[in-house]
Image 1 (cartoon, helix red, strand yellow):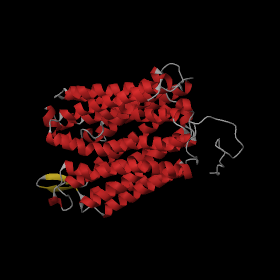
Image 2 (cartoon, rainbow, N blue to C red):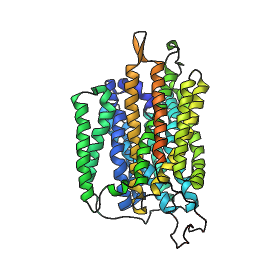
Image 3 (cartoon, rainbow, N blue to C red):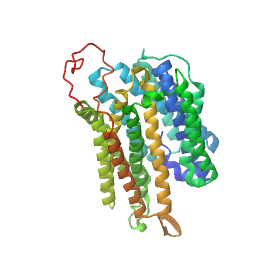
Image 4 (cartoon, helix red, strand yellow):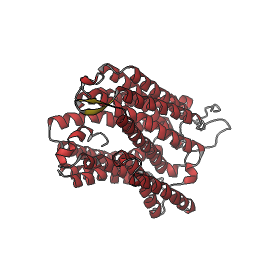
Length: 461
């Protein structure tokens, strides 16, 4: 859902009979809806059943896909894309179900694979979407998305059990509204600031409004006995530093998606562009998705041996190395394949470590909401990366045939920022209190001091 519209972006104004600025809402609507839905669905999953909310999310995905598939004008497409965004809670809900259902020895690798699928789907979806958009009517993309959503829902009904772990209670309506308003204001300012002007009254007003609503929302949540988000849990060092690292890591990983496709598609007359099609770009980026999947068991293995903190630090270091390679090598197709594979390996490692860190620090009853917020932190990081990269590339330009295009120095600056963000993520991760992979899925039994429930010694960390 994140990448299915990327091949359509240049053609959307013509396809929807609107301006480029208005057409961008087909992307922004999904981002805003996901920001609202992710923490809300997580909390609802903890309260009323994760499997139930998983099916609700998939139903929204199917309905949204059908709405877009039947549309050829802007408003219904934006509505459909927003409904697709509301399905973004499937990843944290899925990870939380795994914590409840899987034995300890399978939990780390399973959650790593589930978390990495967020990147895998994007990397593999890009070439597929480019091929379909190039060879058939663009509506086919969304009919296909609806079909995949139905298939997923059938498998959930047949194979996924409903967890007995529930907190019960009532939904915090004021908390949902407050968090939703704050997130929409923040992400709207970040995503549209370049179009409206970063110093414009609208952009600054949204930033100030988001800060004010967040402060009021925080006071409300702290006064509640059953809040939407338990801020006291979030303040625990393992959760706090993991979420901070997730924001920075999300920023670092997204620079690849912004820079590499543009470099490959820019005309060769620039002196550094490769003049390739979107389909070629998708095929170059696809191996990174396969590498993310391959790294999931590696992430689990490092986590079991050294703890998820070390895994996240290694992931950040690998991503930084990938960006440095890209800065040095950007002249041939294989250079981009190598860079995307290295960065993809780091993302795969990191995506496996973050849910393990969260689950090791929160009670089972808050698994879904805590994982949902962690996913949201990554999304905020990627949104910030998009905004900052847009500012850099808009100010470092050259003229070619009367058209302003980003310079090679501009792209290298964005890559350097991505590498720097990865290093910052590594430093932040170093402050996370050391933990082993979560063992919450296993029954708790008395054990001798310094030993696990399996009778194995636990080294001090």
